[in-house]
Length: 125
Length: 375
Image (cartoon, rainbow over all chains, first blue to last red; front, side, top):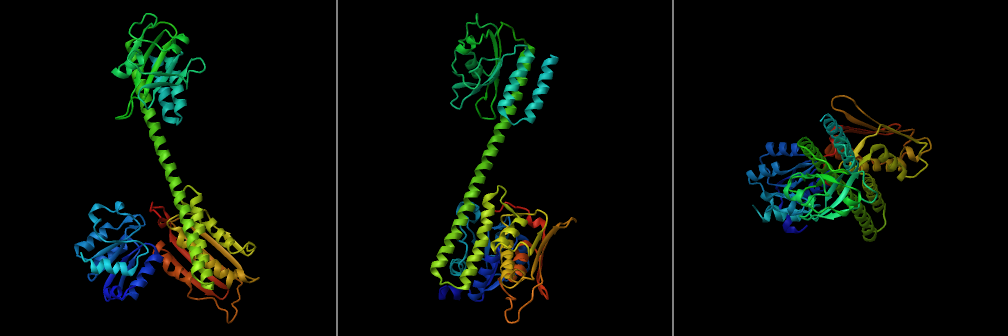
């Protein structure tokens, strides 16, 4: 992790949506090390929706695309409507992402925090 | 008339029941020959080139005709005329017929009269072929015969269409299974590569051994998944395999008991890791490390409105030696107390009783339904 990248997430509240515990836990830990505060992690669409609805101070989000068979798009829409920058964490190639979202940043799993920082902070929407 | 209706009913029944196209077509020929009293009939199938007809099924023919004889579709033949116009074509006596040429095998089989009725194809496809009723004596085919044959040929067309759709579905499913097995195989390979890289990158240590053992547990799951067609693993098999991986000869110390429970491929990994950690600890510190130790692994499924899997791992007869205490906040415990609730909405309990470790896991069965998520 570079100095610049770790500094850039300092103090930001980042929502993590990921259904695989080990990946969610790993990402959350790395985000905390990078100075961010983690919202979640949320393992399901329902839990993610709950967090988004009740938390008005989310600064950015990392979204797994497929949550136990449910697609994360409603959460993406809700965050985009609030101008919250998002990054898709996914193994899918661009062809699997609906056209509406293809221009949004994506990170390959496992997500590296410095990639995330670059996508969320240095390429603001 | 009555005989023809009976034949339609009989054929309709078979067409719904059978999935064997040759059986259906042959029976169709037998029944139609019976209905029209000729005992000679066939179905010729239009080949993908759109220009060749093959005798696909038939009754009353000399050996070597059905399944072999081919003819070209040309305008000079009664078959070509039927395909071009889509209308039934009747030849009451081919000895005096001047419109068409007839294939040599018809003459050879003593055919004197015949009628062609087209078997239409599915939407936007070429016709499947032609139903042909032949006769060894000259004969007329009247309006009743023709309207019966049209109905009959349409029923055949629907059946052929149903079967080809079924076949296509099966082929797709088979292809998908091959791809899935290949994917699973590659996952295992990658895990093996990761192990090899770790062995070269890290110096030998207990941590590296733990890492390798965990990777092996995941690899075993992938092995299970690549084997079956259903992309799932039976819980009992998973438990037995995990125990066996920690050394044979534990059989007399462990009781494993529970009904078959299918764990879908996308849910099984965390549970396999948990079982691996429990077994590892039992072998190192617990019931499987001491002569007096016993292990009981039992599970059941509740039968109420929201069925749950009740899983219970209980060690007994374990004396905890002072000084060499098991890790009370290890990886296994984290997986049980955090990963299982997170991922499988499980309620879990993990405790050190005076007698050994006890772990109880309750998982809503609804969570264990496959949801088609790709690995």
